[in-house]
Amino acid sequence: MTHTILRLPAVLRGRGRSRSAHYLDIQQGLFTRPVSIGARAVGWPEHELAAINAARIAGKRDDEVRALVVRLEAARKAAS
Image (spheres, rainbow, N blue to C red):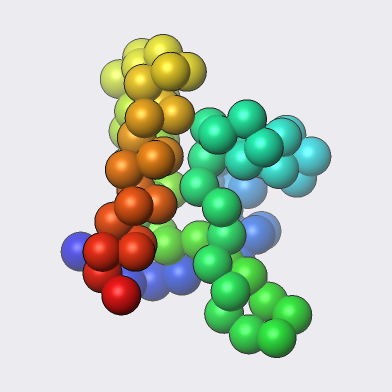
């Protein structure tokens, strides 16, 4: 697993979503919350973007994507 953290512009390019749609997805549980990488900087682990994109490509329903997001965020806590 890669430990690359992507900043917002790279995540938006990878998702093909606008900034407002991206943050709406986070509010709705359809994308993981950002991780802090500095006092005023956040990013997203690259493997989480890949996993969510793969689920979307596979045609997963929103409830299945939400379950994936919960698992990905739980894995963050388990890794620390």
